[in-house]
Length: 86
Image (tube, rainbow, N blue to C red; front, side, top):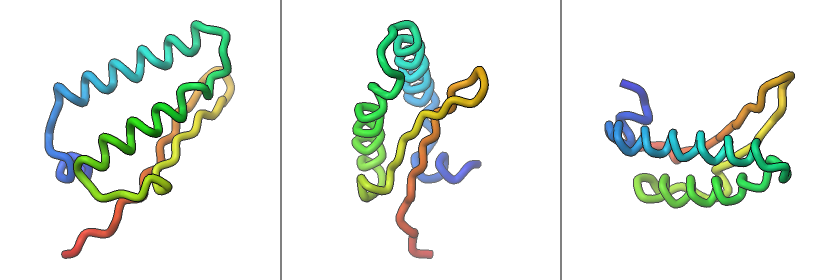
C-alpha cells in the first residue's frame, strides 16, 4: 500500500474521475493553440483545495510545472506534506 493510499484512503472511482478530467484538460490545451501553461494555476488551486480536505498543507508547498522534453510534455507536481507524529 502506497503512502498516499494510506494517507487519503482507497478511492478508485474518485481517482479515476480525476485522472480522466486531467487527461481531458491536457488534451484540450494541446488541441487549442493557446500557451500550454494557462491551465496550471487552476490545476494548482484545485490540488490545494482537494489536498486541504485531508491534510493541513501550506498552499505554497504545492508546485505544478509543465516541462517539454523531446516529443513529450511532463507534468510535475511537487507536494510537501507536513510531518506526521509517530
